[in-house]
Image (tube, rainbow, N blue to C red; front, side, top):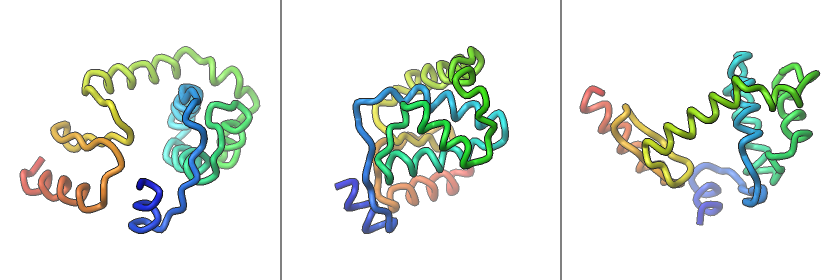
Length: 137
């Protein structure tokens, strides 16, 4: 159903990676990318690698390749993935998700008031956005 919706509504072919992986290394790598001003580019490249190219985003070499494609220095990539600063930032994000009681992905929080979880049709996201705008939030 998700793949069909992605194809019909967004023109995307979905070929997801394995579901038995630990995404923490990818989250840490994204924190590094954010610190270098390349967070959005890294996130998009990582999502494409996982959802469209079925790559393992828990594999250090895969993450290193993604980082290089967006222009990040990967000379000490193993150390970056062990950096306590990025580890702490990921842990803080996870704690916030638990505080919000997020149980599905993707999860979008609009104006710190409305939570939309799971793959939703475009129309649902549009309705929430319009409601937030109407309420002046």
